[in-house]
Structures are given as C-alpha cells and as structure tokens.
Image (tube, one colour):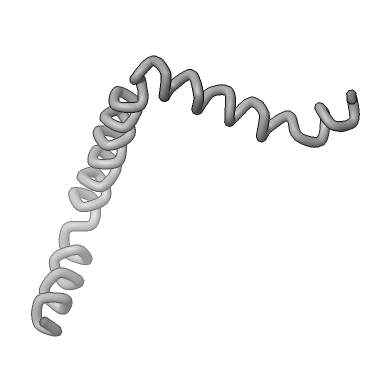
Length: 64
C-alpha cells in the first residue's frame, strides 16, 4: 500500500483537489484569477516589446 501511495501521490492529490473545487464551485474563482494573471503577463510583454509586437501584428494582418 505504501508503494502505491508513493508512486501515485500526485495523482491522488490532484484528483482530490479537483473534486473539492467542483463541489464548492471555486473553479470559477480560480479560472478568473488565472485569466487576470495571464492578461497581466501578456500586457507586460506587449508593453516591453512594443516594436516587435507591432511588426508581428502587421505581418499577421498582411497575411490575412
């Protein structure tokens, strides 16, 4: 039993957390937080690389 636990500890923990999130409805909060953080990183990247993003966007639009 201990070998099974040590080998599958991450899977068991992940499934347990997923079940708790689904039961409590916290997944909406977590998705919102992940979305906010992702948009923050994207905005920071665009701000620091304005010229590069501008040229890539222009090339993408020209291909369409």
